[in-house]
Length: 176
Image (cartoon, rainbow, N blue to C red):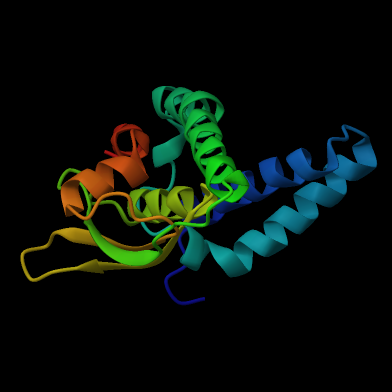
C-alpha cells in the first residue's frame, strides 16, 4: 500500500472500534471480537483518508476533555439557542425572514483542516444555517460560505459572531 503508516492505521482502528462500541453498546465477547475485526479492516482502507498527520494528536487527555466538554456543554447550548431562534421564526404569525448566503471570515488561529471541517459541520448542525463551502484567499485566510435562513446581520464579522458563536474559539482550543 502506498503511503501506509502504522500509526495512522492504528489511530483509525481505535477510532473505528470506539465508534463500533458507541453504536452497539454491547460488551459481549462476540461483539468485541467482531468490532475489532471490522475496525481493523475498515482502518486498512480508510487510514490514508482519515488521519493525515500526527496520528495520535487527539488522544491527548487535555484535548479529549476539551472535546467532550465542547460537545456536551458548548455545542449543546448553541443548538438550543438556534432551535429557540428557529421556533420563534417558524411560529411567528408573519413570515418575514430574509434568507441569504454570507461569506464569513474564519479565525486566523484555526489552521487545521480537521478544525475547519469541525466548525463547518457544527454550523451546519445548528438549525437555520448550512455551510456550503470553505475557501482560502491568497493571504491564507479561511472563509465559510454559509446559507442563513434569516440574515439578521449583514456585517461579516458580526454575522460570523452570530452564526459561529463561541464554537470556533472552542474548536480552536481543541485543534491548536
